[in-house]
Length: 209
Image (cartoon, rainbow, N blue to C red):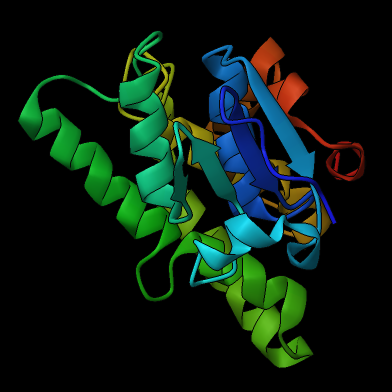
């Protein structure tokens, strides 16, 4: 078990291979946040932190005496607490649009994060169907991946952080986009080339590509 976190430090308790933890690690690296990151199993989390997370889930963020454990809450907290570089627009309409995208990709029924989880943990039939849906969804949005350097944006946002970690896992998930998905692949390569993305990878995640 880990000892209690340093109250003066921003501390992330992270799964070394789960997708949501990777999103947070990428955002923290992109913002160059001074941080302690512990890649652990849930039962290795300090007891006092675990008690403050009723979901007993990873990722869990400890900062300024508070414990945060929902992905969207963590992402927005980090963007407001460490405002440079900004990863959400200031304009409320644009910000709401990004929030809806994040909901669609990470939390809604049948979302891409859920499909990735089904591919890894479901039966062969469930995995094959999820793989087919995920590929179809990505190809369907090719024009949006090709539209601007980032997803519907000239600058990186937390939407890109969510998409990058998913796309990094496509080879492991056996999802082949082929020629029709070239715009998605090119977009992914731009994100993978960022120093912050490379820094965010754990040893096991490096093996996915």
